[in-house]
Amino acid sequence: MIRRAALLVFVAAALAACAGIGLREPLRVSLAGLESLPGEGLEMRFLAKIRVQNPNDVSITYSGLSAELDLNGRSFASGVSPATGEIPRFGESVIELPLTVPGTAIVRQVLGFIGAVPGKATYHVKGFLSTGTFGRAPFDSTGEVEMPKPAQSS
Image 1 (tube, rainbow, N blue to C red):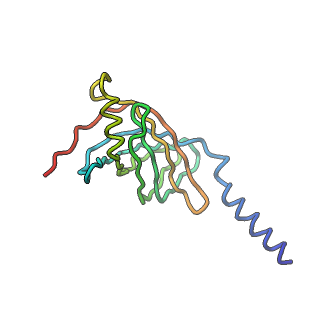
Image 2 (cartoon, rainbow, N blue to C red):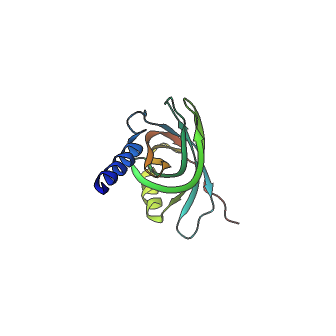
Image 3 (cartoon, helix red, strand yellow):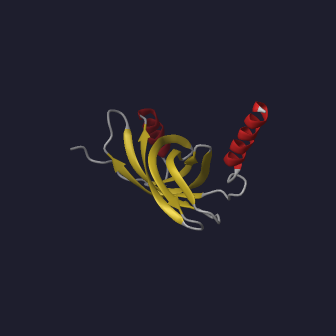
């Protein structure tokens, strides 16, 4: 009897975890903006504005966001945010995400920008929106963005 109850609980949890996974189209994500923030030490900080489009027939409620950003094919920045909200069915939202750029990534990018088109970069952003205890809505997108000028220290 206890085994049946445990099996029933396990099956119910597995079904709840998988309920929305197979039915969703992937989210469409683009970098809507990138602003410079004051950094610390050798780090740089940016505020990324990420436009998330939901091509699904159901809204997506999220609580948390994690992303990694590559520029010109090189690892550049990563960030997490406790942002919460809802992306409506067949709708879109812009989510702000603070990004941290380590000093080593800055050096790689500076060397990579030599001979590149000034002020422009290709990007690859991947990550996920947390949709609950058992769920994630992953995204993976590429595009082109104009690079901001560094913030002035005060």
